Length: 285
Image 1: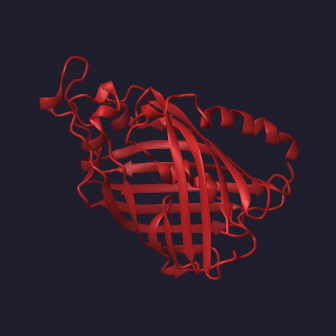
Image 2 (image 1 turned 90 degrees about the horizontal axis):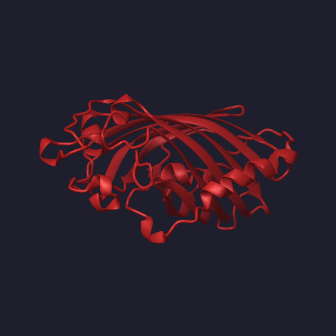
C-alpha cells in the first residue's frame, strides 16, 4: 500500500472537509440505540487507508489500533440514524498474514509490490428484529462467518479492490461480490485524501435474508416480498487521514449510499439513499 499517495498540496481545504465529517461521525444519539448491524469493513476503512512509510517497532509485525464512532442507519435501509462504536485492531505479519476487525483473517498468497490476493475469512454481524420497530416479527439474522477470496491492486494513485464471499456459519447463508475503486493523494505534508466508489452484488439467498418478507411475516404496511439476485447498493466516499506523527493519526469519512432495485423495492427499505460518517483516532506501531 505504500506509494498510494503522490505529493499534492491542498492544505487550505483541510478544515472544510473535517467539519462535516465530524458532524456526522460523532452523532448526539444514545448508545442504547445501537443495534447489531455493523459494517466495520467500510466504516473503519479510513483508518487503514494510509500506512506509515517506515516499518514499525515490532520487527515483522505491523499493528494499527484505533477507536471512534460512526453515524449510520439502525439497519441497512433504515431511515433512523444511530450511533455506532468503531473499534479497530489490525495486525499484519511480514506482509503475508493479517488479523483485523476491518479486513478479517487472511493470507496474501499472491504478494507483489502493487498487488496482493488470497483467501480470507470475514464476519457478518447479522440483524436483530429488536433493532427497530420496522423489523418486529421478522426472524433474527445470526452472526455469520464468510469465506472467500480477495485482491487489491495499485496503479499510480489508483487502488482497485474486489472480493467474493460465501456465508457458511449459520448467518444469512448467501454470497456477495464486492468491487471498489479509489484515488488517493497527499493534500499536505501530514494530510491524505481518498475518494472512492464501491458496489455490492448479492445472490438470491442474501437478498431474501436481508430484504425479503415471507407470507407468515407480512402485515399491514409490510407486504410479502421475494427479492432476487442483483446489485444491493452503490456508494461513494471521501476519506481524510491526518498524521500528527508517524504513529498517531485521525481518520474521517463521509459516505453516501444508494440502494439498488432489489433492495430499494423491499418494504423494509425506509430510505433508498443515506449518508454515514465516522471519526477515528488511532496509533500505528
